[in-house]
Image 1: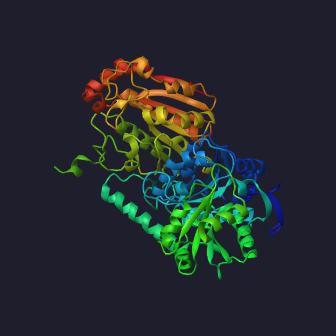
Image 2: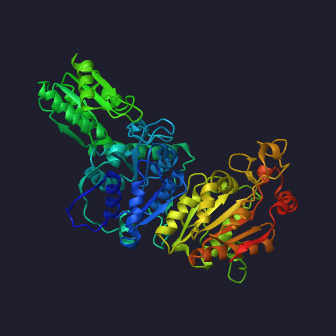
Length: 365
Length: 253
């Protein structure tokens, strides 16, 4: 498929393909990746579209995920819009690099199309990397801005948004999605073309970038080493300050049928799509159920959940893992109402009826 | 007599390159890093590339290389410098891009990044300091540690059954089609320093002429890690390191 479709033309494609198209269109400078199911279509699509012949974007298949994330570091250090993508085991390999990127204050985009784990696990879809993503993952105190798309359209939109947020806060941003959204085909309107930054724009937008030391400035050094403890604490304070700003400014969530709800389902990604159907099933039986869909997982919609805890009788977190996001919901709700969990693991996708049963047995009783 | 009386044009026989700043170096007496840093600074200055150079610093003693040369630097995770350099050079093809790595960084933890960057023929230069030991962490065994050589993790001397043979990675890299230039030098004598400088210059020119990957190995001393005086270290290096890592071009295409 060509990347030169008309603006606002409705196309049918996989979520993974939408990410590749969106990356080219939003002026991404470089993609570095390593094949792994269920996200290989991202690099395959990029290689097929050959953006080096159109926008000049570099696409390179690296020898490992370790190398990919470090290529991203090198590119980001030059003020370039760089990205990589992988799936759970590969993302584990990237954690060292993500910690370095966060510490060196480098903006970049990482896509994780999650599959079931632990270990080599399965290629079936999962949401089991929530903890790894929003609690740090690598060593040291750092956070990664995390967007959780629930449709092919959002795969495209969140790729663009992830770059914007990453550069706004000089920090890595992740698109965290399950294998279903990556693999399924839906209609999508691709984002409009934005040219890649020129070197003058890079100098203006990222004055810290290593482009070669010109006579008008000292050396630019991309670095995460602070041997002196007080300097290291200062860097930590800078990072933590930025994370607090992100928490203040960038929370995004969706509310579905929440106004009159007695019970709330809380779910992200494909689980939220399943829960939408559960909300319908429950309301057909006269049970007032709403759905909160966190779109940013970091920053987490803590305040909105706290407010709903004053209005509803209970919340149920639906996740394709052993219960991870539920901990953040409980922290937000702080014991005001019961917060229960229902999930499936290892690549099993719960059905809307299954979720409805869980709601009845765990919360409504 | 003050310093201005000593340093005047009539007396000036040597001037430090301006690419090198006056920050006091943290390197131990007798260490080869300082000389190699100076040579890099001189070559960048003579090629007039200060504003077009992006260097990648390793993890190891040379992690602080960015303190001493006034060029743009990126400090890499341990062993990953060639991956960073790959991306930098591909996105900025008109720049001079080089990595500066020790034997642990390049030949142990970063072996995959090194081999694959070389195999792709990335248009970068790799300056490889081989002193057969981990200096920064306190003298542990490196992949290039010689048989019988003592280190803090081979206190009775390296043996083949326990640790295998020393890895001659430059010889290995020279086999790859992506490598256009592989050479091995040292900086223990004035003549050797001059040869090393020429090798660095050729490697940098290759990067600018997009000829492929160049690797310049500098067989080096680590007086602290070897637990010898600087003078003894040089003698020991000539006697023991040179037979295992012979000087000269391994490849020049």
